[in-house]
Image (tube, rainbow, N blue to C red):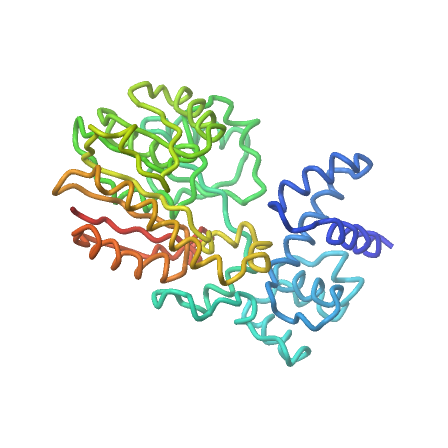
Length: 386
């Protein structure tokens, strides 16, 4: 009966979800409207709906219930009541390695094709190991934090006292299971930031010098600017975004990190900025460009089926519009750090070729950071010298 109730709840959520907003936001509203659901029920419902979307467009001709069972089998590593009820012959096989489970699914569902999980094969960068990338959608990404310099011992001791499991993956970086709640343990704000491991790796391309002037032009809530300042506290920063509410979040994060030497501007970078930036020159520009986000869909798997092919062209053109209004403010001999969280070559390698031809830039280094190998996002970064 428990599994039947879980299926009914899943079906109700899927029916009500219009797929025109992030799934996590919809679920938060749904749970507020259904307060009779306990915390365990909410966790189970969230697991089922997210796992369902992780299947992408594989087995689209099968009934929804069948697809959900397959997704649950592939995504879980421990037996559970749902699989035990609906597919008892698979339940004891759940702990098997993912490749073996995929073969079992293929044997029972001949139409199953791993490549259908991510239906944009023709657009993917040549640097991507496609099989490993597709398989990663059945694995929940980790939660990563970057510890402020000098705070690592303090943070690690607090986590050990609270018996919170973690893995140290770098001098300032810790990894946790995605469901870990750190707010109740690490109560001192500003001594760490939640930042994906691949994002942290992209930030190593900054290489700022003392007293440099840098512009984080699509700053959002400021994660990369915080990294930049932690690496070189003397840097003078301009941070901008086209959303005032996002920059308010940035202001709060900067305050907690005790960063005061910066300017903040709401700018629409699809337009000429001569009126606002006519006398500005920068020693470094971070262009963390708006993109498809395809390298992060392991965290937002609903995007696999919500994204249409035309969006790739839309973001490619948007990136170029922004670059035209940004690169002119970069000093000669200085770096443009171009970043996306995309796996599409049109937004990455091909875009770098266009940037170099358009603005007389030279590639100093570039990398597709393949986060699917370590439960992280996949990002692209290029350090381009003017």
